[in-house]
View 1 (cartoon, rainbow, N blue to C red):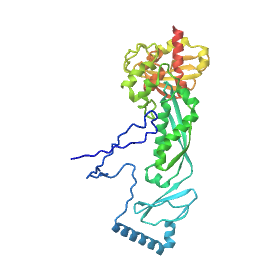
View 2: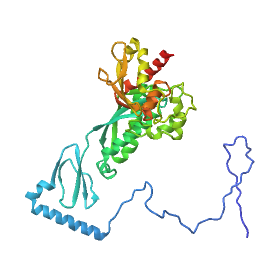
View 3: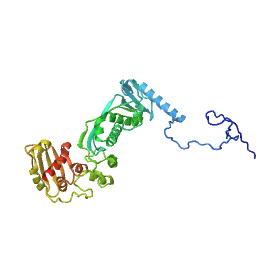
View 4: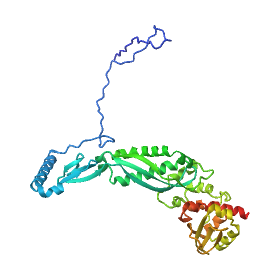
Length: 404
């Protein structure tokens, strides 16, 4: 078999360094290669491919007959059925109709005729609406514990999509806003959250629209509520150390880290959040283990350390409900006079009520566990003003420094 190869001189104007006498080879072939096989998509449906359904002729005939009979019935009983079949829509309203299960083009505004027995309809309000994301407790990238919510403004842009693409539009939009809020804020430091609210508003709005536009909804505005700082940033805690915790935070929990005890990331980071006096290798003290000092003795030892400056700085009354051995009700009054501490109910109404085990009370008063860490791990239950409860951390440190 003989094979022929064509050689031709090609223009090389762009190659200034080459000589005009040089020859380039043309590798084109005189043969035509064609395949006997054809390739096509085999199994529907296909991703992101629009398909139109054309019902069989028998189905279309039956549907037409049923629609004609329904119209004839409405015509015969018009004075009666007009209260059921005729709908009046405002300028901001649209009607989504499913006729024999098939979605019809949106109707309105004005007078709309709905066929009884074969039409199911939903009225959609296209005005801008708003909802509040309740305050969420989360840990920022620098270890601060904050509580923050948001207000979301949205409106329906495609009424057909809003009905056909999602089952409960309001609930789905709320859950999406709550998830995006936690994701954005937990990856940023407290200082960034407080100083760059406008950027966070825009970022949250864009991320929500990426999903809600597919539902026929547009988020027009996002506003964060007042940021409540439960605990200031913890020195030495970085994004890398807390990154594995952020993905495990469960919204709506009083103590978001309660279910995380004993897991790898928390057991590695917990020593950083504890008081500096606690060695990193110190084992966790179970709540059921009795304290070496009774709560009554602890409260009695605190009373001589109270000062007027501490009362002026804190200005709150703490009530302790201690469970377990030697438990009971105790109080720490840092609101009047030179302060007081004792057993039983406080004379003034308490600003916050703290519930804990005997061993946890001993650990906090001796500096082994910070109140902030006890609260985040579920060992300390707080009822009342949480910002006042977190001041107890500074109180414990000053009392320990005074006793030294």
